[in-house]
Image (cartoon, rainbow, N blue to C red; front, side, top):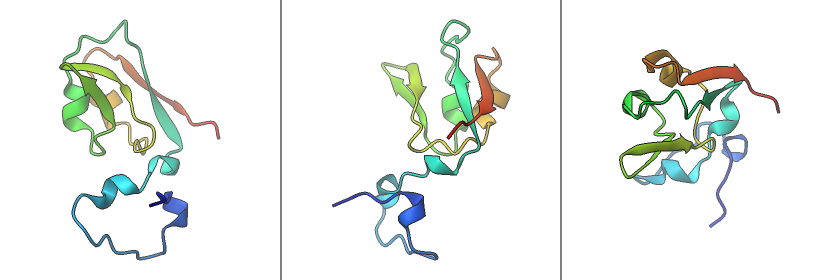
Length: 93
């Protein structure tokens, strides 16, 4: 099965089965993207808790990065990070 980007999905498409959201890469929607500064990060994972897109990648209870296939650039992670380890920058496409 070929995965479609959001631009290829029909208008008013129906997601017809649970768990199929992962089939649609929605990261192309963003105009800004988060930049993670690993040196400032204290691994509190507050960004992960608040991310509405589950785009914060975590392994062994530590943040490992951001999955830009699904990050829509909302900036919630940057706002919620108490250590300012995430900043938003303009997306260059």
